[in-house]
Length: 324
Ligand code: F6P
Image: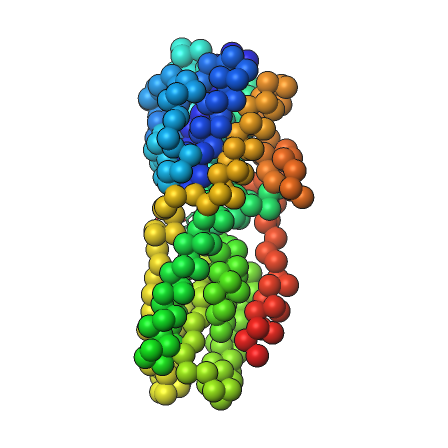
């Protein structure tokens, strides 16, 4: 392998820049050329490439977003799109790819790699932490800190006005962000897709909390939760059934995807980039690098896509006990 392409795809996540920096510098360390590919798979298809050296990635370890930009590509889902991508990569002499993203990114990578026998290694980058084969995806830790900081602020006003807040956090299919920030910010209840609390139990719990003398409460809701009502409907439902509650809603939204990465995410990104490049150099392909028991490990992309990232349900029990 002589020339490695690096790209980011799907939803961005803090730490992606630190990972790009690591890939570029590991290539430089091993005297391999590195090419930055812009706008995810759209850029691969269109030949939107730029050579990068160790200095091209200076001053980005602390930056949120991705300097390479990101996109969710529809054209890459087509055979013609992927053929064009292969032709342009070959023309540029790129003989391997490091792709940073989530399961959609890896699905595309796997199909492409199999079709054209093209070496690919994935780095998991998504705030959702919903990828099998790593205890932490890039950006998850930073998002947790962003969310906890926001909830702390909301708590101030919630308690001044004796209010109940439903706070919606990201996590399309997974409750990792909700569960961890719910415990970290001392939420009264946490609603996640993996465990449907049910409306009755939610009401009971809120009633108990009121009876125990609490004057304000926070309920953290994962956007993908399965309770059957969105946060605004939940507000109406609770106000209807418990008129003594003054309820407000806060949807944190994309604030969770931005910001300077935490030290944890910077270190993780640096380790993942080294492991990704060195794995390609050892002839590995179709793997994702991940953090397991504080070690960098490889998981076949196929498994990373198909496997379920397990949620730590012990945290729900901890949360129950903490809200006594
Ligand atoms: O996958 C990361 C994520 O932030 C999800 O939590 C969220 O549902 C989705 O991306 C939002 O995507 P978009 O930025 O395309 O609206």
